[in-house]
Image (cartoon, rainbow, N blue to C red):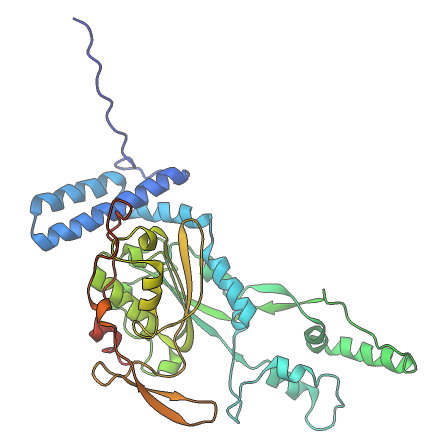
Amino acid sequence: MPNKKRGRRPIPLAAPNLLRPMTSRKRARKVTTMFHKLTRERDLAIKEGDAEKIKSCDNGLEEMGGRPEYQRASQLSTSFHSTSKWVLGHLANNGWLYGIKTKNDNGNQTSADTNAGNSESSDTGESRTKREKKRTTRRTTRILEVGAINTELLDAAGVTVSVRLPVSAAAASSSSREGRERNDTKTNEHSSSSPVLSSSQTTTAKKNIHVRAIDIHSMEERIEEADFLKLPIVDTDPEERCDVIVCSMVLNCVTTPVDRGKMLALLYHQLRPGGLCFFTIPKFCLTKSAFLTHNLFKKMLGENGVGFNVKSTKESPKVAFFILERPIEDRNSNSNGNEGKKKTKSGTTYTRRRQLDPSFKKAIIRNKGKKFPNQFSVVLRAEHIFGTES
C-alpha cells in the first residue's frame, strides 16, 4: 500500500514551554496581529457569554505564547523606531530635558536666554554667582510612560550628555572663558572687530528628568505593574501632575471603544496644564477603520472632544504620531455647564462653554467596503471627559 502523504502540522508561533528570542520582523507582525485578533474575539465572547469561543481564544493565545510573546514582538518592532529618541529629542529642543524653569519670587519664569545678554555687563549690583543661580533654577521634569516595554526612557534619566551651544549660550556657560574674552577685548580695544566664539563649542549637561514607567504586565523589575485605566490621578493639584506622558502603541491594545475613550480622557487629566502627551497609534487603525479617519480622530482629540491642543502630527508608513498639549486654561469644568475660564493677554478672564460633540459619543460607520476591514473605534463619554476633577 503506497504511503499516504501526511499533512504537515502547523508550527506554533511559540513552543509550549520555550519562548524563543524574537528576531524576525515578519513573525513579530504575525504575533501582534494574532494577539489583537484573539483578544478582541475573546472580549466579544465574554460579552455574549459564549464559553466555547472563550476557551478557543484562550487556547489560541496559549499556543502563540500569550502576552509575554506579544511583548517580545512589540520590543522587536519598537527597536526599529525608537519612541524614546523622538520624545527625548523634542524635550531637548524645548529645554525640558534638563528640567523645567521655575518661577521666581515675582512670579516670572527664570530664563537663561533672558539673562544671557547681561553676561558681559559690569559686576555692579548682584554678583555673577547670583545671576548664574537665577538662570539655572529648574525643577525635575516629571514623565509618565504608559505601556512601557523597555527601559530606554528610564535609562536616560540622570545621564550627562554633551550639548552644542550657540555663541551667546557658550559665552554664558563658562565664566573663565568670559574672563579670557574680556582680556582679549582690552588688548585689542583699538581693533575694529571683537573676538567671536565658535558656534561649535559644547558643554556638558545632566538630564534632569524623573521617569515613572508602568505596564499592565511588566517584564522589567524597574517597570511598575499597573493598569493605567485604574491608576489614581497623580495629584489633586493639577499643577503637580505629569509634565510629560508617553503613550506609544497602547490605545490599540485596549479592547473596547469606551475604554479607549476613557484612556484618552485620563491622559488629559493626568497631565498638568501646559503638559505634553507623546502619543502614537498604528496607522491602519485610522486609515483602514470603518469607523475612523485621521482627521476625525484628530478632532476627537481636540477642543470638542478630549480637550487637547494638537501641537503636531506626522506619519511613518506604519505609525501615526501626535504631540498633544493640555491647554493652560482649565477647559474641563463639568459635564452640564462646561464653562471654562480663559485668561487673555490683557489679564482679563472670560468664560466659554465647551460641549462634547454628540457624534463622538457612539461608534458610527463612516467607511464602507472591503478597503476598510479594521473595526477599531473610539467612543467618548461625558463622565470620562468632564467627570474627573481636572
